[in-house]
Length: 244
Image (cartoon, rainbow, N blue to C red; front, side, top):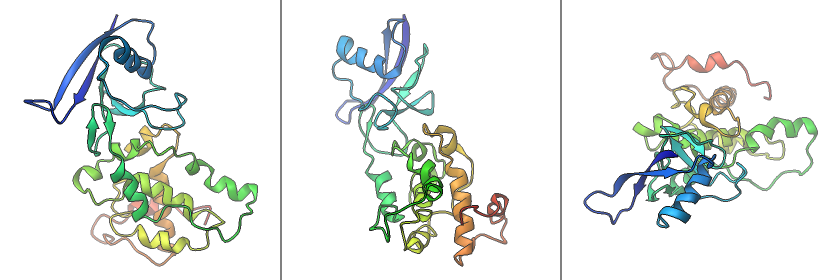
């Protein structure tokens, strides 16, 4: 038998809304999502969690396992794992979070598809945005970002890597709007710690995307507001964006 612990949350539970519940599972249960299904079907039907495609595509089953963001459908279970909801987002119940805060950051950064100036793209132009287009909106990077721990107004890697995707889209003729939108509480506030890159299930590198956004910002006439005070040299290490 395997044992896992799930941090459960219910706002109506007294005296504390959060409890750690430990469950015993058969050895044949290999993946975390299968374990959650087993618990719900065989042990406690009140367990609440999200899932969809079961193929690592929809992103809805993202949780934290032993303090690191994972997709439940892809994570291979180990005994004594500790499971909890994503961080930095309000918990609705158990492992289900309200992603409105993360999605709102996309609006603030103007990272939504705009009417294209043209619809044709060459293979080379498509390749420029292919990696960032693989984002499944799971909010794992948002959950892992330490800057959001201290500054809730920070756009976060969730929005910034998507900004890089739209700025590089050859079909969009007003990329300047997005560049303008990411200057405040955005591209310069990142500490470049790389936590977002470590947890992305799609292999996207938000840290590098943010470095490239800093280069594009400079080329658009912006400068690091902390330059000269010890915090403005990091973007130079990223070099120039090869796509610019």
